[in-house]
Length: 445
Image (cartoon, rainbow, N blue to C red):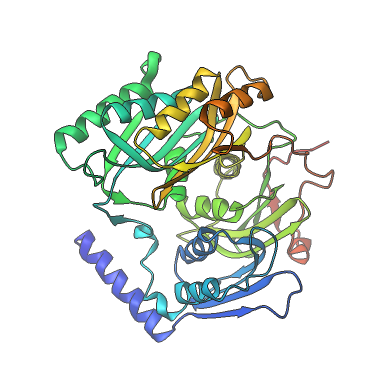
């Protein structure tokens, strides 16, 4: 059967189901004292949980609690959410956006195979993966400036000695996407050489396209494909800071139960659900809770074919991949925020100054809107020592005291509380002796 025809048929079937069973969204600001409660009921299909979580996190809502149930053909979700300051969502514009995005007016969200992917002629997308090293972002930015490419948006992650970036660039003169095949080939070739560095690593990869993907999901996919979850020493968290991921099998119900306990942070739920979805697991039930600084997540999962985790090797892979997904976005280093009028070569100049002052970028987010550049960098001393205050003062004098601001040091975090590393949120379900635990449970003592 023609694959394209099969996908079209699947899309038409999904649309039919949604017409017969339109999604229902209820937003409640009365029942919970300190959060807005969002209830979503919809026909069930693989990937719908990720779509809902993605919509909520993309507008920077904090999910403090959630209950998910999707056994059978119906999907029911309850989310407790707040804004970044911990307040209920009272803005009617945001509430209306949620209703339209999750309700019947969403006009049949595309299936998970095409979420967040569309063509764009406004910019050219560049995806980069390779070995991390001090000054890498500076080198990449310098090459793009030399090739007369202006970086309008970018997100850069580093984890476990690996680096990944999704960058959106335009032609310096026309301010539109770059379409000339020869020029695109040259950009790809030069950037690949930069990524390979002196060791000429064969693991470096550069992709140039006109597609627009959901950047954060794509970064997870890129780092997963680059196998950053395989711990080889180097850039990994201290054992006391690492998340605790536990996998057990509940044979009576043919579920694998994944429990996660780690430090809470924004978009944590998106990161874990994204990873489980991209690994082709289906979440049938889940419970998410936040207690103080810690987050507890519990997922009841199966493969797409309905089977649970089948071996210790697979259990270990699930554990490692979820740990990596959580760690990739952990803010490693001193947070710096730069806000100024955008100009060609701005990213190249700023990262060059960082490099000249022996700072390395561990994570970065570059955005441009209405001629204004708002860039966030997490930086560390290239030698591994804490960032010297005098170094930051020197950089601020060069860039401008009001342009570059220090936003605190996320490294000053405390280890997880000294509780049992496995805390089941569906406690009563685990009284059955039919559970088989073939997992490695860490101690935080």
